[in-house]
Image (cartoon, rainbow over all chains, first blue to last red; front, side):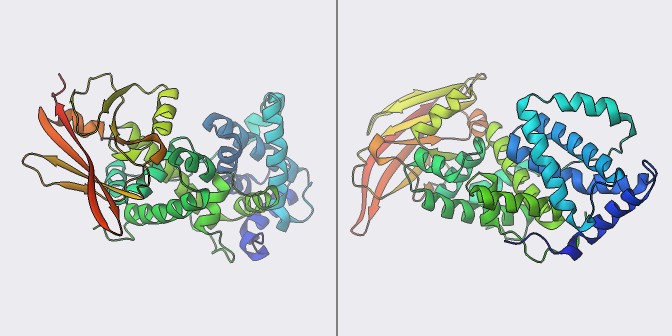
Length: 192
Length: 188
């Protein structure tokens, strides 16, 4: 799989370029917009790697503070490489958080008041009654696999162990069940 | 948020594998980087995560019925869920209820499952249509079928009798492998 083509990052690269070219702190609009775009993605990265809401929120704040600060300091030479740049910072901050997170307090003290803040909600909350109805329409195996998968956020190997199935079989059922559940919840599949 | 379309979108199968840690390190890093730079794919993952959150929420609300296994029930207990468990012998019956402090009601139905490939469960409550659950999951080695009725529904039910029939299905036909009676007293 490829990283996204340059033109897809065009708007974000342009924001990064504007931040880098302005005097530090004088591209507030670009900083706020870049923060707004990247915050949900960085939070998801945090959820994936830290599996904790609070830790993911901490990661998001630290990564974006560092990103903007480094952009202000002109440390990103090719703005088209923004995703790779942010990825590097994410990895570094995850390591730091796992070591105890001493960096956070320093960053907040240094830059906290001078950073843009934007809403980082990652997805709208779903209608639970509808989700329950849609779950009820799945096959028994699909429902069991999705429940066991999401209850503890477990991969196919572990769910297979719980159900006495092969991991490959669990992946097939999980994929099919999720497609059906998503289709039902979003209304793109007609409820039967 | 409106984004430019992704030219190489990550499919659901790979997003799932990524989220549940099933990719090798190099593939995971590629997906990480792609997601940080790609609004549409990041939105797809966010939707998936929200769906998972909703599944957990409706289960916690007691709105999900499912056939599971004892191994999963033990995980629930390990997470501090307060379980009310009933073990019912083959062709047996049990007096049962649900209490306000219960998080989950679990029924273990003993059945001869050795060599059985597929089981259907048929539930009968007087005055309502029979409910057929086809091809339910079970662990044959355990010798039991484990079911979690939706506790939110159970709390609304008056005292009643429910019969559950387990039917083994194979290429030669169907045979009943157990019948179970639940004499349910309404919760107080």
